[in-house]
Image 1 (tube, rainbow, N blue to C red):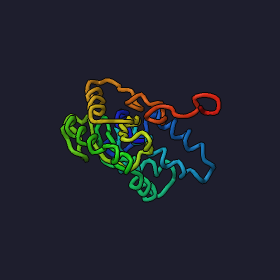
Image 2 (cartoon, helix red, strand yellow):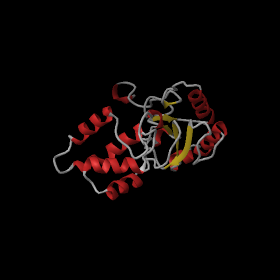
Image 3 (spheres, helix red, strand yellow):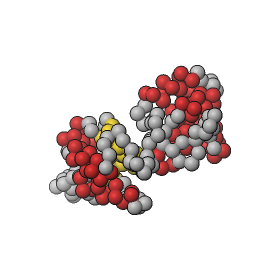
Image 4 (cartoon, rainbow, N blue to C red):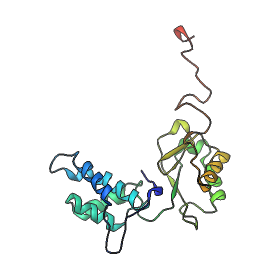
Length: 204
């Protein structure tokens, strides 16, 4: 859900308010829930606030969402501090999230991390001086079959190696939009070696 490339609004002196467009979106989200259960919209509204606010959720934004949903601010803070896809500090335009859970670790996520740090000139937990990239590690992005995996804003880049992630980062630096998904041409989560069954009648 984290996406720092969507800036354009957000925290202002004295507080945070949704843009007219996002206010309409928030009303549509709230309307999905029965009367009295509008608090169920807290996570999608925090995500909307994060996207407007350049990729992070400020305390003012959480207060604003609390007011919209008629919730105690502490209840919104609890949600905002629990989910790791919500960023509580400013991040770069591109938030690079490195999966380090067992499948990615076994498939070489350490090499991916080293390539990211070398290409970007920063370490995990840091942002480049130009504000373009932030680099973090996360637990299980849920694409284990296609490990190792990196999420950049809303896009997944799968079946990576060191050269692959370097090429993606360099393309982003140039303002290009590298194609997400498998970087080896694999179709979704098909076997890396290609189909091995269902070749004909009886699977022969």
